[in-house]
Amino acid sequence: MSNGSNQQSETKPDSKTNSNTKTKKPSIVNVAVAVIHYKDQYFLGFRDATQHQGNRYEFVGGKIEANESAAQALIREVAEETGILLDNNTIVKLGRLHHDYGDKQVSLQVYKIQLTAEQYEQHKHREQGLEGQALTWVSKSQLLAGAYHLPAANKTILEWLKLPSKIAITYPLAHFGTHTDAAVAWLQYHQENLASESWVYIRLKNANSKHLAEQLMTARPDILTILPNNNEQLLDVEGSLTANETEIGQRIVAKHLTHSTLMQCFDKDGNPTALSQSLSKDYPLIVSCHDIASITAANKLANMRIQQGLPPVIGAFVSPVLATQTHPNDVPLGWEAWSALAKLADMPVIGLGGLEPVMLNQALQYGGISVAGIRQFI
Ligand SMILES: Nc1nc2c([nH]c(=O)n2[C@H]2C[C@H](O)[C@@H](COP(=O)(O)OP(=O)(O)OP(=O)(O)O)O2)c(=O)[nH]1
Image (cartoon, rainbow, N blue to C red; front, side, top):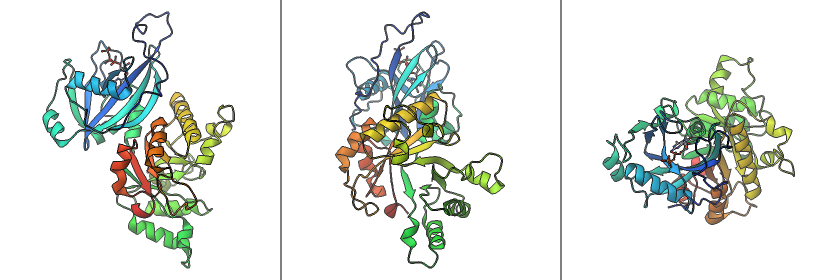
């Protein structure tokens, strides 16, 4: 089980002073949220009309008490509310977010937990919790499509949940350098070998990248793509899109920020730069991090976008986990150091660098949510 420590919890919960006293500035309530699922079935509770954010569905969870880590609070709340015991389940951090409801500010620490087949069998017909609340299992597609009315803060959680367990990254053009036409070879290789319906980060840097990315997305209408943020002219210029470009635009799931672009989002005093304000307002972001400084920047950017109501930061590639042919001179972090960085991130963490898809379980154990790569993923 991952150790979901509560060290990043900004403010102590203050349940005694967060009553309805209108004269007091609302205190921040720290909440542990459990996204419980079995495969594509997700478990929701229903908040009573008398509760804060009542008459809405919720993920099971509740306030983190003093002297309790977020993971401990989560295990306690789930047991109290549903009777499900999570002591032996892998508890993976999805992210942390702050939301101001006006009458109450919450800091949600969100974890994803897959039940065992046995636990699911035992609880799949549950319609009522131990506190009398309604409980229900819903399909992931319905949940993500917004079919269930959740508190506003959960919008970001649903965006995080879209992240798949594997992301393929395209080869650089140079990999096909021995071919007469590298671009043609690049296109043909990816067109033929990408897994169906996969998420693909089309990492192309040269001037032809717009055209090539478009060609690949046209040839493979099943894939969803992450595109470099610097390719701003690509497919997101309102009003000037052809029908094909509009269709393609709907299959872009995020724009990617390199480590160096991310680090330019804040000045040396930590203030946001003009660059941070010029990032895509239409698409979520995925960022690359290698160290504590970049994770700190990613957390700031993520918080800023939530406060500004912009599409959130849905993931951070933290790399290199292991040695990789792509960057032979980089010293790998190793799983332990990678895990320490993953725990600091306020968004789902994707393992990158020398990994194979079968290493997903290791990534989950060490606090990540997905794995990505080139060679073993295409
Ligand atoms: N449990 C849960 N709370 C959520 C979600 N989204 C969201 O904004 N919240 C907010 C609503 C509440 O303000 C706060 C949870 O506090 P709570 O009052 O339910 O916590 P609790 O179970 O310890 O409550 P209580 O019995 O002490 O009143 O977090 C969610 O998905 N699940």
